[in-house]
Image (cartoon, rainbow, N blue to C red; front, side, top):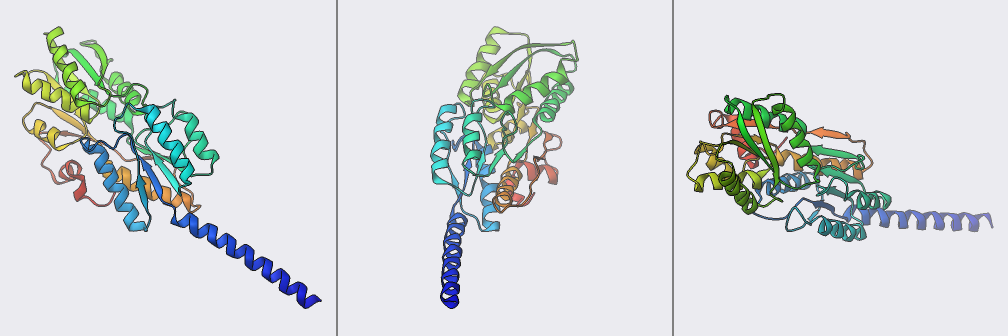
Length: 324
């Protein structure tokens, strides 16, 4: 009888181990889902972040699925996508939230479902994610302000072309920018205009600014499309260099405008490293390891005078730099 009881216990334990093993194997085969702000191929920043994600995934033997909205202003669309992703039960989610507050409820659903959540580039109110990997955007905004001060010794009227209203990134960059230039009474900040992540809209905004404010001295574009649209407008209006433009990020077109001195300086982030670190952190978190709550990937100010140095060439062409 004891022998039979022992065999039954062994059989039950074997079944438990087998089922647990199946579940563990299934979990290991699940992808990590990366949700950028947009999958628009025209915005190079997010293409480079994805390259970093894929490089880390290949190195760590992980599978990545990328889903996203067509534009950076489709907050409702991102929320719907995230609900679909929760149903997939992925190993982890790496998210760049389109809205600092509106994305919070769906983020709580992710956490409640037991899915590790990492945020990259743009965070969430309340610090819901286990780790936030991004540029220190307040500091980056200050750098843009300091570059504007350096470029405009006589100060004057300036305009801010931001991107998505309500995005943590846009809020923090503008706060940093304003903190740098508002201390100087020589500046008159006209307003904040929102491109909604569209270079075409930034172009139209800039053209209207040139018409409405003939004494305009400077513009700050707070992301790639905002900067690019403003640069194209200045180029087409035959005012390259007359109105000083400080921008963000480093698409190939922006680099060309920097060389032509239509853009005076760019605050360049490290999107490849951002994606690489975010995916690596997601893998660590999903395997039960402790991770840092906040990782600053840094930023640099690039001028035409320093754009050809080796470190800055790596920043301008980040795919050349495979590791953080």
